[in-house]
Length: 294
Image (cartoon, rainbow, N blue to C red; front, top):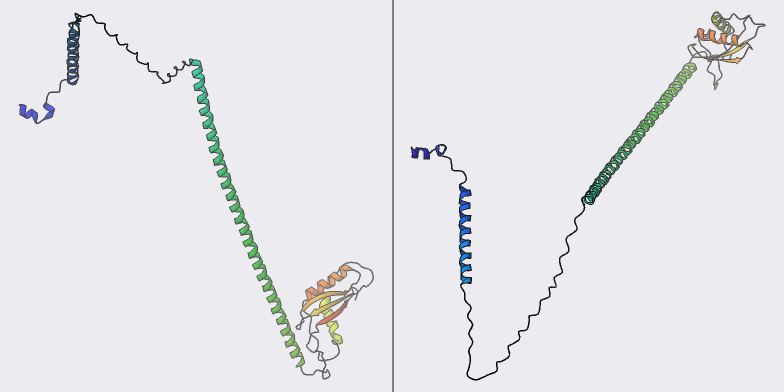
């Protein structure tokens, strides 16, 4: 049974408590006993010691030599400075006041450090805000500069486009005039003398009946109901295309009645196209006179 228990520690009996303490107390008791015995032996030896003095006398009388005087040893002077006196005890109230002052100093130091840290953070934030504002300002300036550059480029392109269209239109008009001149000069039956710069087949103006035909075409388009005195005349310059289309009108001489002049211009706008003359051509310009009572 014992060997079986030795293989399994959980079945061993628990150790007795206080073994180390008992051994320590026993050792201390033996040490005290040895010291007591040693002191007792020493004390006995001192008490049994007997001092014996003997004098020797001689037959002849002799003077004894003087007893040597022992020079007392020079006392050693201790040069070590005396220790400082112990500090007087601080009263409790004064100590509490000092503690309070120290705590107040620590609190002020902490507040100062906190204020310095806050000031540093505020300065850093302000510098960051300034940098951000400067960066935004530069970006805005760059954007405006880019927009102005684009606007200038677009304006330049528009001007170039207008100039190109104007040039093309002028080229078309010049080509059209050249074609018309060539066509008119090539028409048979021209009565001009050699070297004449006219473009008409005849040197005279339109036929006598042409003016009546124009007035007959324009008159129905005149809408005028105002009651005016007299019979004022409005003289109008009408510009025509080669096919008879009205391309422009202008009051050459006013009648004195603006309502009548406006009615004539409106009638010409409604007419739009003039008839051709008996020879099939249309004069480039025609001066017409209109009266309300004709």
